[in-house]
Image (cartoon, rainbow, N blue to C red; front, side, top):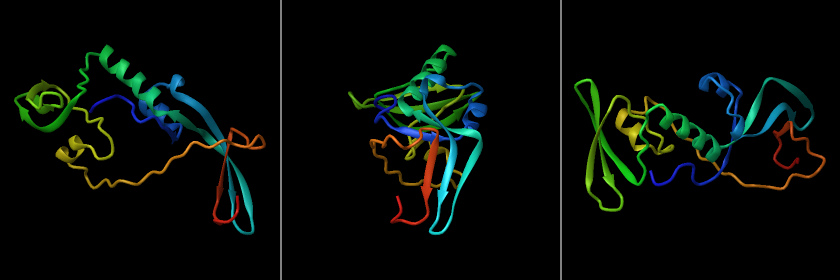
Length: 161
């Protein structure tokens, strides 16, 4: 990993994330979606979400989680490429390559967390357990004033907007 939270992007996640994290990551939330408006060729419906979807700024969430992790004693290793890991007694022995010097480095740890994205080398080394990946295309757009920030609109007919 070379830098935390790059490139910047927003994520749409369910409010279930608060349960998983055990707290509400307020500083990372840029918006809450309370309603879905669904449109087909002949019908439309507005659905109130029981738990709002959250629009999260990924870099802020990663920064928050990194601060919490280091405060709890975790070591975040940047500017290194993960090579492999192996059990070593009660520990895990992880091998990295320093990106600047290309020298290899081994580090012992109680837990190894791979936070290196969807093409995670850590995940591949540990087995993805059948989990696939999906492509993502994201763009920042200016929303017209008549769009409500608390509503996400979904069209099931391509030419309708």
